[in-house]
Amino acid sequence: MTAISLMRLVPDTGRLDDIVAFDSLFFMGSALLSYAAIRVTRNTERMERYADNLFVVGMLLMVIINFLFAFDLLKN
Image 1 (cartoon, rainbow, N blue to C red):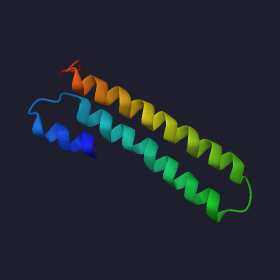
Image 2 (spheres, one colour):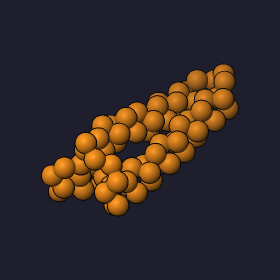
Image 3 (cartoon, rainbow, N blue to C red):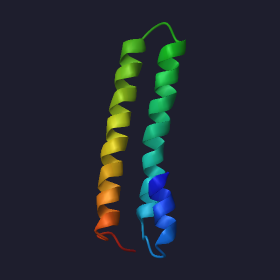
């Protein structure tokens, strides 16, 4: 959310808004799988592993997005 707030301060963020929206899907998938792992009695370890992997991918993408935003590397 901080990245979205910062992007509103800069008038021309290019495709970063779209990438942040795409990145939020990784976090949503991670949250849903974590919840499912708590509620379901079978395959919980596999769901937890997928949730962890989605979270890590989302974090890595967020770091890349912030790097591109900070150094103004991605334009329209």
